[in-house]
Amino acid sequence: MKNKEYKIKHPEAFLDLFSEISGDSRYKQLGEALEERQISEGKGEMTMCVLADMLENRGIEKGIEKGIYALIQDNLEQNNSHQEIITKLQKYFNLTRERAEEYITTQA
Image 1 (cartoon, rainbow, N blue to C red):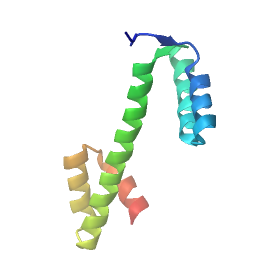
Image 2: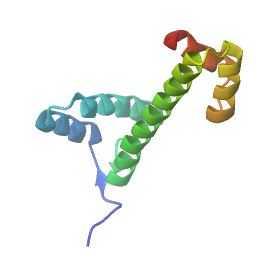
Image 3: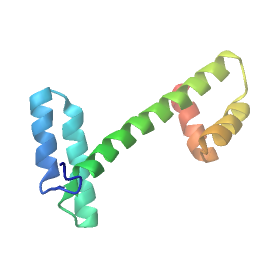
Image 4: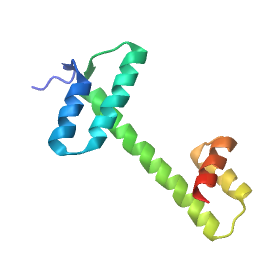
């Protein structure tokens, strides 16, 4: 039987090991983000489930960002106004006007 509540005492070291074994720097980046979180929250342990959730959330955020850029690109190709694009970004991605404008500025 597996214990889902088993605590990893040094998750940043665990992620550093994964980074070295796999040659994938994303684990190291996640470890650095985790260290910042631990400093701000005062926690030094976490379960593997929490770690897996963090990885999943990063993937979701990247997917949403790709969707935002695809929507902008498609609308620019259709010669839609920036205002129309901003309205769609607010509607479909729940962005503030300021954040939508930032995305358009970096894409255009």
